[in-house]
Image (cartoon, rainbow, N blue to C red; front, side):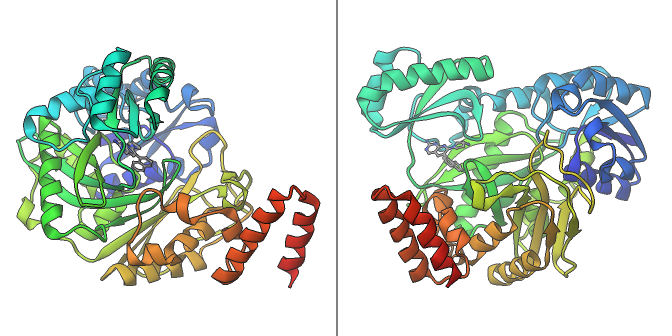
Amino acid sequence: MNKILIANRGEIALRIMRTAKKMGIQTVAVFSEADRDAPFVRFADEAVCIGEAPSSKSYLKAKTIIKVAKELGVDGIHPGYGFLSENASFARAVKRAGITFIGPSPKSIKIMGSKLEAKAAVKKYDVPMVPGTDGAVTDIKEAKKVAKQIGFPILVKASAGGGGKGMRMVEELKELESQMKRAISEAESSFGDGSVFIEKFVTSPRHIEIQILADQHGNTLYLFERECSIQRRHQKVVEEAPSAVLTPELRQRMGEVAVKVAQSCDYEGAGTVEFLLDDKHNFYFLEMNTRLQVEHPVTEEITGIDLVEQQIRVARGEELSFKQDDLTINGHSFELRVYAEDPANNFLPSIGTLERYRPPHQDFVRLDDGFEEGMKIPIYYDPMIAKLVVHGANREEARQRMLEAIRSFEIKGIETTLPFGEYVLEHPNFISGDFDTNFIKHHFSKEIFENKDADEMQVAAKIALKAFLEAKDNLQTISTESANWQAR
Ligand code: MV4
């Protein structure tokens, strides 16, 4: 492979190009009009503008991208994450054009893109799954029967959904019919596939995912787990590896199950198998993501393996150069996603120019970013502006390094989630590792955030006062009161 095209933008385009260059591979960037001045465009050996800012007119234009690739004599396309990365037709079209798709086969993408096909594929591999229906449910009588058997609350999930899209919780029998109808019509309009299934609702799970790597010669390995429970409305905030709660035995069991999931669809390349882990340490297969994930750096930090390099090697047909027993966990890593969002304002996108952008310069810190001082953050794409990644000999050392990095990261001109990250990393439940996917729902309100420097009792008193005054429906008093209090 002499030249690869990166069908993506921002930090991930840069990150992929860095590895390509390290391997002596030429790089081609494709970019939209909004990204003309972006670092990834300059960093590439060649760059081609493929259209207007909206991704439907640029980063999602499969045909245009393949045409550019052919014209420039590209022999591999890396899709990054998002955009076309999990689009089986794109992977197929790339292959048909005589170009290597740096990722799994269209077949693997298709199977894992459908939760029901995924369940069917893993069926004979002894993979634990949440109690529920195997196939699509259309008949309300049958749905009621299943729901009664497994017990409420239940989730109605769209087969074509994922990452939280197309899910509905049903707490009692009398809501089931209307919720199911709604779920089906939503799935139909959002995904063009109205199939839904039912699962028991696991109340306070952790989200643990296993990184896997498979070559074309039948070798499939697991590169341990990432703990991704700290998320807000399905948007991950902090990830870490390893998880603070897995025992070596559980890690091995989950890793081996993840390998089986990958084998069930003849997977090749890098992939991620998602599990829910309940409070009794039962784990259940949720879905498989057939792409490089945003949070892959924490796995790289603890294993010392460059996942993009491995993706390229596997795509070239090479055999993996290490075995499961060669892999060990070295220390601990955290990733904080820095979003251009205002945590004090319901995480609304914060638009504007990076008037000042001075990342931390510190040992054991890796920053994957795609912007520079003076640049405008385009409103057309994901609001994530950087990934701050740290490594330490243990969890506490890594946590201290992350706090230090957050505090020395200077960003002016836009609001970011950096202070929110600091709040999370300092929270007693985060420090102890005692948290689940409800962490932010339970421990965060913008009142706490606005009063970050006050002690806990004071904050609690303020929240109580605010609730009391709101209940009295005395809005005038609230604003005056809280303003006075703040000033003291
Ligand atoms: C669940 C669940 C509880 N029980 N399934 C959300 C994203 C998608 N991958 C599946 N999701 C969930 N499925 C059952 N049977 C809870 C979630 C869930 C969740 C999962 C992972 C990380 C964060 C989450 C936040 C809310 C709900």
